Length: 254
Image 1 (spheres, rainbow, N blue to C red):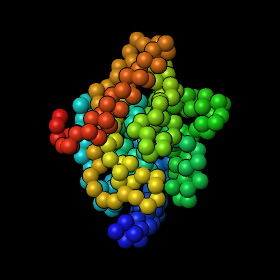
Image 2 (cartoon, rainbow, N blue to C red):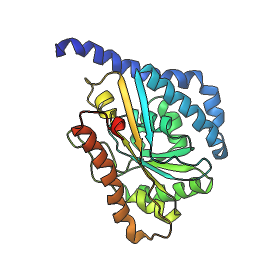
Image 3 (cartoon, rainbow, N blue to C red):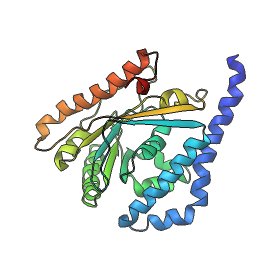
């Protein structure tokens, strides 16, 4: 029976990349204009949200988002979530309305068309370079001063699929403390199931996201980075494990 799914999985992956490229091609002139100045980034962000919603709908995903607390427009935050799929980027854009800048690995800049805008709008990091990681703080600082927010997947990459949640790097939490901005932990419950990095897997269905209570960093020093790291990870991991063992949807029991 599984043998008959392989053609579907192959076409589904091809369809995904088609959906990624199509709105970029259609919106190309507007996208180029929106990245000419850093101050125009909020306009690019609005177009990026349209792009993300187009892909999610086209892939047959139905999103369900639970907010324990909602970000205020006009305020800066640090958004974090577990990372298991390329769809995480689209779901993050769908979930959050506050203009934010992704901190992401530089390898994605090599993707045709997508990479052109990715490297001009995101904060790229070479995780094997201490100098590159340090540069992230300087670029993030400039973006925060512009009133934007920052989004980081603190696992530092995509863990192997049998791992529910990898350990978190401290960098994101040090950044939040340095700038005294709230941390917004989020749990993405279905991205791994729907569209993991395993090529022959996935399919249409629901994508659930939980936006947890914010973690306040007011008055904290860098001494507390490890503590809030563990606090954020515990919230996300406990949600993943509870959903994994619960017969009903996590969102239906809250």
